[in-house]
Image (cartoon, rainbow, N blue to C red; front, side):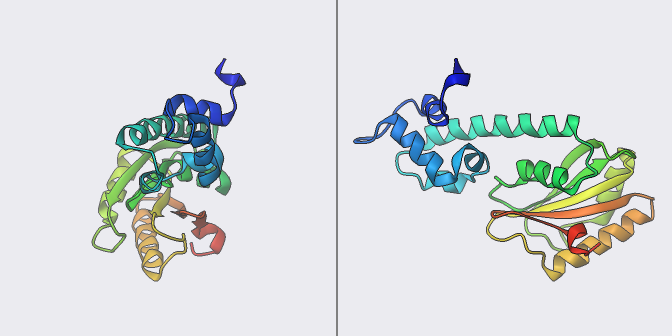
Amino acid sequence: GAGALADAELLALILRTGLAGQGVLQLAQSLLDRFGGLSGLLHAQADGLKTVKGLGPAKRAEIAAVLEIARRVLAQQLAERQSFEQPQAVKDYLCLQLAALDHEVFAAMFLDARQQLLRFEVLFRGTLTHTAVHPRELVKRALALNAGAVVLAHNHPSGAAEPSRADELITQALRQALQLVDVKVIDHVIVGRAGTVSFAERGLL
């Protein structure tokens, strides 16, 4: 059965065919080596797959679909089983949601009083600026979902997860707006290609 197959063999089943001079198992293993195994491939961005010789649009679409299914399953399991009191659980969940995106988004995890996930939502797309992020919209969603707390998040698809001064200012503005309706901002997590940064762990909240 599938459980007895090696990682490269599983990936070869999706690829189905190799290249001239390179069998399908060799192609599968080269992909795993390039992205750091299945875990790295799970977080690979679309642009990264485009650079792999021999992966045409059809194969890239098939791989992307399988990886997206895997990400959604893992994210659903985390959401159902985890209380998001621990920073690592939050970062793991947000990496699954945001690490593979090739465009910037701003999102929020809306939590109940026990810090169980009520909803994860992408609220804005594009570069994070004061004009893009509207505190009123975030407050409206928190009230509509009867959230007791939120975790803010955005991604840096092209680089490191280091927060900018603008990130800090926006975080404080959103935190102050949510305080008016008794919703606590637990953290703001930035997801980059090489890892994550937690505002709470940095003492920025």
